[in-house]
Length: 176
Image 1 (cartoon, helix red, strand yellow):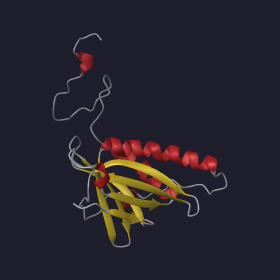
Image 2 (cartoon, rainbow, N blue to C red):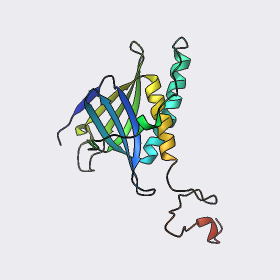
Image 3 (cartoon, rainbow, N blue to C red):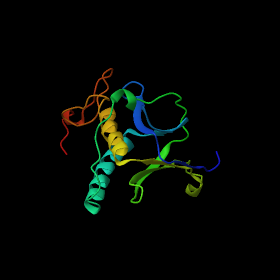
């Protein structure tokens, strides 16, 4: 696939979601501008890290620009679900965040994950330009989606697969 740079400026809507059964889910980020829909594959840990990063980023913006109106945390769960077509453009290697003061817009930059034998400078990039409220809703919803997976073992903190016996390292009798 040739290198692409796509800007959805501004997005009409941005969301994240996961499809599949717990333990086998695939996570996505999806943004729309008009009829154009961009869907990207991400990892669960990327959704969680992005949510934490967004919160810290918004706090920093609020400190630097105290006169900005506050952002909201409101979202409609039904509207936050991923929508067809689910035809991912690429898998995300990394995210970064930026802020445009003049337009009061956050930019979420997604960079493509390439095979090890390809030059990283050839990776495609998608920029989702969002309001502070849109990116905050994305982060809150992302944490909600990520938490809906497999139950966590109270002893070791690892996910437990409900259809398989859980091997807990804390129960095997070894001392560390």
